[in-house]
Image (cartoon, rainbow, N blue to C red; front, side, top):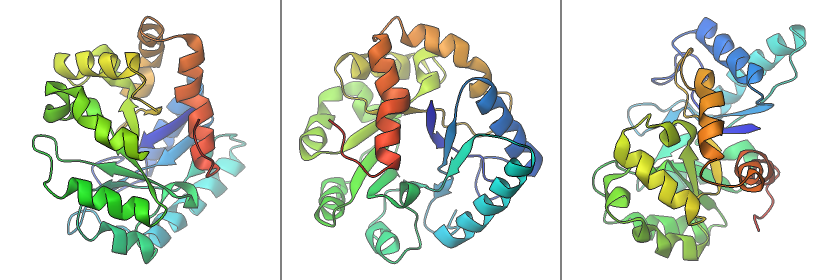
Length: 239
């Protein structure tokens, strides 16, 4: 399994508070079967703005330590980019990282009310051969009210990443009901933990996978946890 959404880099957002947290999260992930973690610490203009280069430096240091520990887990660079009118410029200038240097970018939308310019910003990204992956759609109020509001983006080739813990009510009953609808309607392309700290989502993965198996088939679980994530990391197109 590849975790497509995790906040394990230390001290750069509201995720891991220190290096000890980082390595505990990585160990927990490996223990439950993850072979790769995509670093998606927040990139929010004027709030969390660690650059692609700075993130790469941190990841390089972490990889060296993991090699010394004979760890087989792979760490990939990326970011969870809060939608902003300047995001395309930041990506094009190499300041904001894409997922593993691919054409895929993980984006976060506002929780309660979608930006009026969302469609225009999505179109800009697509026109520049960038493929947006929208993080945890089941958490957005407007999606909870009507999942069909995502259809126009699906038709354009936008992808959606849901959070593992949504399926067990980690974000409330509405998010749980919504993620079930999204999964059953084939509107989710990959899954991520959105893990921010030790002793949280990774410790619940057995329960999460059992619940997922009640909603979608084992083949679909494999697709969302491993097959599609590997295609994204390798800059390949999804079927």
